[in-house]
Length: 466
Image 1 (cartoon, rainbow, N blue to C red):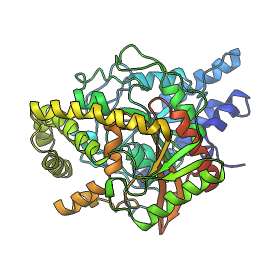
Image 2 (image 1 turned 90 degrees about the horizontal axis):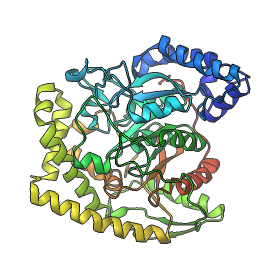
Image 3 (image 1 turned 120 degrees about the horizontal axis):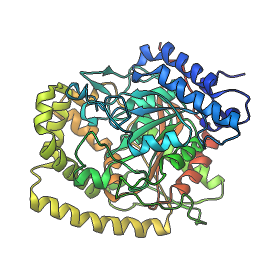
Image 4 (image 1 turned 90 degrees about the vertical axis):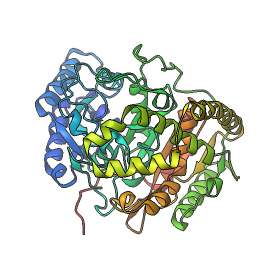
């Protein structure tokens, strides 16, 4: 029998529901796993065993009464430290917020609890959640359990590292420029950025978000199976009136043509041979499963990425410039400077034009995806980066920024996208990104399941590095 911490969320919930194991036993197994491996990788930065065991006992009590605890019946999950969880600090990787204790759960946390999940810890993020790497002066550096020489991704690097190491079956992440999809890719996992409005968001510990984050930031799941991604998304997306942007769209949208567009190098971005090989392999796997796949140039990504930078930096320059200086995180300061240089001065005219152009791009993407319900493209132009690669030089950052073109483009147009793992190349995880129509995550999950079945489902690993 495999160790409990290796089970998928779906198998865990089923075993608890049928009383093959208790939620308390499952939680104890994951807390033991956390204690064993987290000191090596620093994925979980806030843990609370007593609170987790109390939640697990409530699940067991519900089952004993004959009640249904919910679809995530006793499944251990982690929460990223940039969303509110009652009784814990919403640090966002900042010493300035070390004591910012939430009095109430954010909607995504409330929804996971309602679904019967057991929260076992809170995961690391870079300062301000502003890098594709996970390091800060408060919580320290998170390592990738598959290969400590490479980034676990960011900003949900702690979430991905935890899931990859068997600390929880599902990790909560957030994504404004790839912060779910890239950590999933870097840690060899599945990661879904849902459509804008699918998962309700709100932090009472902070002021309401500015326009860039309102239009581009989402919460979503990281997991070791496509089935678990679907299970988690269903739980996370329960309506909550605290988010006026939330759309109670159905999780399944009906039949769709099995047509996919293969875009190897969107807008001419440089793409490594290993990345191209994975893209062509995924296309072949879908073709073998009866899909029609055509290689095309695809809709605009570069302009969408530029708008992402302008909207994001307009928010940050207005709300966080003084905080970035006061926090004194050298890496965050460097990255902020490079991103600000790329975005330029975002005044009122630039912001209004960016918002206007965004609508035109959304229209073009919607029309393209009407014909091709799935677009296959790189998660990144390269295999996962070396640790701290983004802060070595301005020139190095620029090259890295270019490699992340697709990560930055998708949030601008509000579409769902799924990172799908496809094993490793030269000791580094590899995979592909699937983009689909608004509120048709079900199409992406169907295509992702085909690729997962052909490539193999990711497994949890021991962080034993050579």
